[in-house]
Length: 341
Image (cartoon, one colour):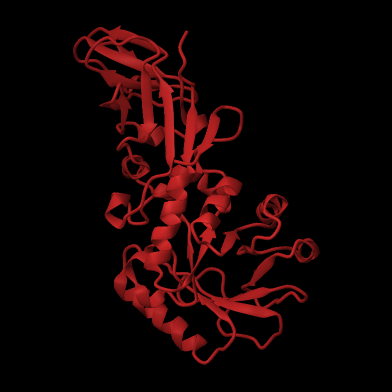
């Protein structure tokens, strides 16, 4: 009887805590606000929030009211900021739950703590100037290209500093993960870090270069091993056809689990050795090319032990954020384990 799960995610909360400590040091005196939207980038919002707070974070940031209410039910005293838009109906719920909101369109709700968002170049949410209003506790903006364009990033930092010069008693927060790691002058009163908190590089490179530890591990196993003869294929569309006798292993994980169709060609670990994913990835299965026959039940590491989310993202021509938030960690298709290592 095999003892390997079909799809098992292990979240190292110790890594989350240590990443928070690393980012806090890089912030050079600014507060760290942990961004835990999208179910903590697929890692589990409540568990990640606890670990981030233990690592020194002083606030939690989410995108929607339901996300914030989910956190409030578990973390009664945590400071929670809703960064996305809320409806008039939701404002009352936010007030009752002691949440903080962001005003980005000129409508500033009353009776709760509000952050005004300026558009300094993102061209998305944000005000062109600061209105005079009460209940405001912070002023913020969002950097568009901190991971790739130093000149425009410095322009945004300058615009924000100029627009908020002379403000007293308000928290100014601008820096995201990339800016915390590259632009110290963007670290004002607080920084909002998401992707780096999970040990995923905002630059698409090895996170270890910035002292970050990947927190997520994803494992499965070989459910079937078979030998293809020359001219035989595997998977829909016969995208992989063996040119010579070839051993392949079938892993019972597919795009419904977050292993995307455009990740064909990436590598995973089979018995600790890198093996190429071949053929069309289907909803519940993928194929890997082997150099020999291996027994069914052989462990496969999809993320972990040097197999990085950033590696998969490069193959899929996307970013680590999309891979991480697309992982199906909670629908009943997988087992998710949080440990503090």
